Amino acid sequence: MAKAKTEKTEQTTEIAVVAKQLACITNEEDNMRLNGALAGVSDIEEIPPGMAELMDGATGTEGVESGDAAIPFLRVLQALSPAVDRNDSKYIDGAQAGHMINTATNETFNHDFEEGIIVVPVGFKKVFVEFRQRNDNGGGFVAQYDRAEGLKQLETCTKDEKNKPRLPNGNQLVESNQHFVLVVDEKNGGMFPAVVNMESSNLRVSKQWNALIDSKRLNHGGRAVKPPSFFYFYKLTTVAAKNDQGSWHMWNVEDVGPNQHLESLQNGRVICDDVANNAVKVQSYDEAEGPTDAEYTQTPPNSAPMDDDGPF
Image (cartoon, rainbow, N blue to C red; front, side, top):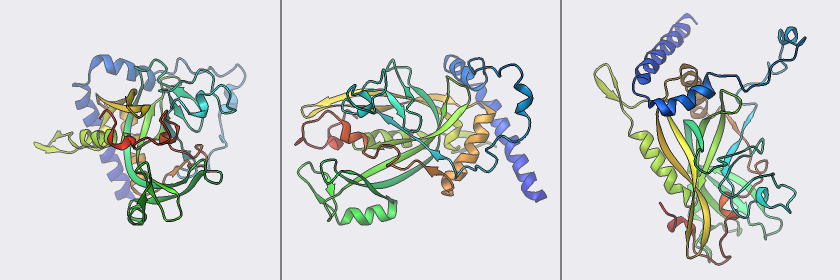
């Protein structure tokens, strides 16, 4: 027990040292935006008079651990998404194609299409998702497979008229790269976990992001070492894309700079380990309104696949 405590203390100390080193090379303009969210609480509602004493004691969430709360998806809204259709019961006031949405809270982001959100990557998984098409007996999510099982299922597929993989039962198999992130909460302060789902033409963006993360190096004891992904911030925005088959919105990833915030580094360490050990629960596709981003794109029914025609 004492050994584990010592190791944890040493790890925390090392992270603090790295945070101090990184602070020297962080872009000042980007850092001002981060500091406002990670250090300030001015925008959070004040505790009403007479209620402060009620803050002491149990909170009602003592039994909740990281695996008990489902991490939501962050998705890009498309022209045919229910959230942007005023006649749909799932319409969200002000939502537009190109905005991002938290599938658990229905909060939207990227309202000016440029500011985006700032995230810290903490994990990655490739999965394959089986869907029944919307016009096939109700449609929706059927099952999710990990990388190994998904590749086996892919071997049984044939391509349909849109060049999409179809399982022997007729359902579609979608390859999806899941980027686990901590999102800088500029509204309430702090950070919250989410999964950025990238599939179809966004798979290229995912590969570029992974390559960027993999290229990072830090000087550690005179050696160039590869740091954990959560040592750096990235900005996510969306971009409009189109070809002769249709139009849609895609993810866009920009390098913001080193993560110099000790608390976010520590939280990143914890969640990174949880993701690696499969100790986190992700919101199900059913809870996240099932269909993938690709099903809500503004594309003719018999179009060619977007996978090979995106702008990246």
